[in-house]
Image 1: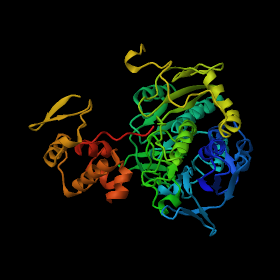
Image 2: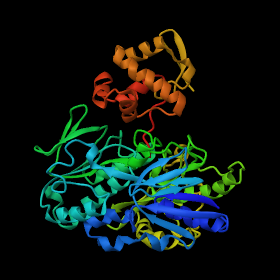
Image 3: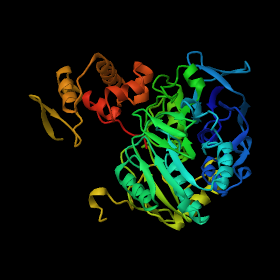
Length: 415
Length: 104
């Protein structure tokens, strides 16, 4: 009996076991997932919680419900992986052996990594919305916020769902307008990047959307510390940004057990081949989803598209054949822009997010880098798809590899 | 790829002036590249540049500030002093490596 052990029962890990349980013979393969709790969170929903869009309970379901029959779920905290021995040790002393290991423990926001962030202002005037309790606490703070300076901030890249901080700024602007208090609130968007986003076409479009909304943009800002007495962000090059309410995206890091096991880089991401997701150090370890170091967005869509390629590759690899699938870094993300509208971006390792249309049978096409209501409804409908189609790995009519169909190439753009 | 002349050497660069051929770089060129952006290289600069060169050779990507700080032991604060303004870009430029990719 061969043993496949999957660390992490989140978006990527759950899709992996659903795909592989169908592909791997039950008489030959035992599959086990390890997670520290039985709570599966719908993370894309966190963005809406501060504005009263979702109640926290709507975003939580038991993990067990999405783990298929024939796959074991072990609840426990991982202490370390011994890659040479092929074992995983849990903090309670249990030991799990494996023949193949899939690391899918994602990334976690780490407010402890920025001096001053976890001080007396944490959850008082400093909030994050990448955790359910953070988003819930922020909902209360926004309700009480009457006037002043809101700063939306990213500590460093990469972060999961890299557009979420922009979406937060757009939604906050619309929220203050709706409550007839926009004139009493100053909004600033502070980023370590050189523009609103990473790539030129999207950065220009999203930058002008900040401009239209009178959201000030502070670029190339690498935060060194937060002065919690003066309520100021201080950068390494000694710029200062004062705030009354700070909504920050803390440094995102992979799990600490990966550092203890010698499997992570400086941010605890697992170095892998970006096309096959196979560990660069171990021939029987893969990393999938946010946990790896592949140079694309840390996002559920990436996990989804890469699992499609990974599942076929895995079966070839364990049979001793060369892996023929090659993941292209495909990502797509809806971007909420406020007032019931949204945008869509679709890109991969080689093609930046472009304008145009994204064809989807029946419900599409969606507008790329263009605001409309259909994109907003697409984003809301996604919650249903996530629980019912995505996690169980049922067929979704979106090709794994990015397509140029409908996209405007930058050199042929008329705009 | 455009070709430009740095000092008396011809090198291949991208549209922003970053070297595109790893092999065309040497210490002398680094000093000249640094001079074009107003930096005189000290031992502390070299420590970061040597790490960047070696790391690129093994990883295939230009190291981030955080990676240099963690693995080469030159703090982010110090990198901002050594390469003022935009240290990640300036280090890559002097080390003859591609501009670091902001991950999407």
